[in-house]
Length: 79
Image (cartoon, rainbow, N blue to C red):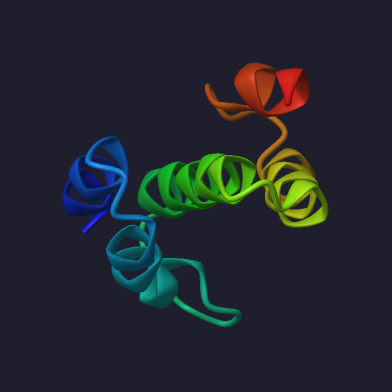
């Protein structure tokens, strides 16, 4: 799902990308932590591309707060 969402995002199909990520980032979802981290980060980038600044910050803050040791945390802090 994350790879498909990345492909959709790269083609600027933001609706499809968010649709693919939704189950992975839903509250209470139980998936592999690395998969969720990638999905939350990608969702933040999509929100940024939509110029939804508050939404982008919320996703990056979610990643930083829930996974402070993630390899994606430095990139999330950048945004």
